[in-house]
Image (cartoon, rainbow, N blue to C red; front, side, top):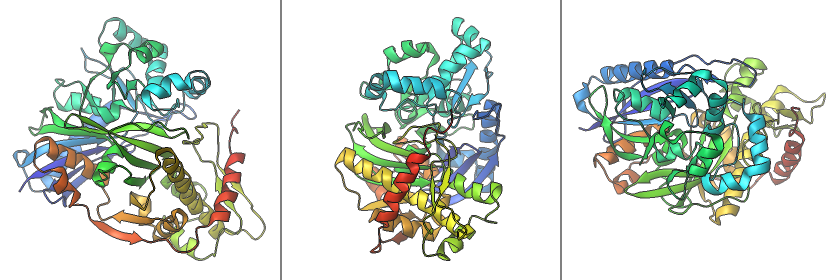
Length: 486
C-alpha cells in the first residue's frame, strides 16, 4: 500500500499526517510554537521554530504510523501563505523573525499603494494592496533591518514564503523554490506572464536573485533529508480547494478556521474582480495554471475564541450552538467589522469590531447569535460578489475547518446562501490537498481517481427563510465599523 506524508505548516502549529492510498489518516503529529508580538498589530514567528517543529512532527507521524521512511512514497507541503522569511544563503541563518501574514506593520504603506497604484498592482498580480501580502513585508525588511540590506549587497539574501524556507531546509539547502500558488500571494508575481514581475521588483526594491524559482504545485522538487521526495506544494487555501476536489470552474469551498477563506475555481483564465475580491493562482499542474477568485474573512474561529477567552460569554466553542438555538434571532443585535481589520471587499485595516443594537433585553445568547450571523452574512456577501464577478452560480458550498462542527451555523449558512452546504468527512482537507498533489507528482493516482475519493460527512439543505432583512440590516452596520482607527 502506498503512503504519502502531508506537512501542514500553519499559523500557530505544525502538523504532519500520514495518509494511505484511500486517503484515510493513518497517523498524525502536531506541535505548537510561540507567537511573537513585538508591537501592537505586529505578528512574528521564529523561523527556526518552523523548521524544528517540521522535523519533529514528520518523524513522530511516521513512527506513530508504524512505518519507516522507506514506506513513504512522497511528501507534500502546505503552508500559511504570505508570511516572509529572510535568510543568508551562506550561513543558512535567518536575518530576522518571520513577518506573519496577520502582521499589520505596513498598513500605512499599503493604504497609500491602494490609493495611488491599485491598477498597476492588481492588473499584474490579481491582488489588492494590503499588509496581508508579502511585498510590503519584504520592503520593510529591506528598509529597516541592516543585516538584510548587507546580505542584499553581498548577494547572499534569500527571501521566501514558508514553503521556500521549509523546502530549502528539508532538501539540505539544495532546493530554493516556491510553488506558483504561493508565489501568487507575494504581490510580486505576474499571474498572466507566469514570472516575477520586473517592474514590481524595481518598485519595491527587491533583488531578483533574492527570490526563489517558481515551480508547479505537483512535480518532483528534490529528495528530502528523510529520504522521500518532495513532490507537492501549495498554499494552505489552495491546498484545501484541491483537497475538496473542486477541480471544475464554479466549484467553491470555504474553510472556516481562525479566519474564513472562500475560493471559487475559475478555470484556466484569470477572472479579475471588479468587486474587491482577489484573483489568485489555484495550482499549477501538467503545464497548466488553474485560477481562482478568493474572498477572505480575517476572523471567524478567532471570534469564537474571543467570546470564550476575552469576553467570558461561553465556556467552550460547542456552547455557541446551544446558545444560538435558545433564541429565535439576535433580537436586532448585530456584530460587524472585525477584530483585525476588514478583508475583501472592503480592505480596511482600520475597521474594528462593532456590536450594535444592544438594549436592556439583550442576553449573551443574542450576542453569540449575532456573531454566528456575522460569519454567515460575511460568507454570503463574498459568495454573491463571486457570482457577480464570474457569472457562475453556486448550488453547493464545500466546507471544512473546525468551525464547521457547529451544525447550527452550517444550517444557517445554507439558509442564508440559499445553497447546499456540504461538510467534508475529512477535516484536514488542507493536508489532504497536499497529499493528493504529492501523489500526482509521482503518478500514484489520476485526477479522475481523486474526484471519486471525496467523502461527505453531512449535507445541509436550505430552508425557506433566507434572513434577507437581517442581512441588509447587517450591511448597514458594517459600514459603521469602518475607518475607525486614526
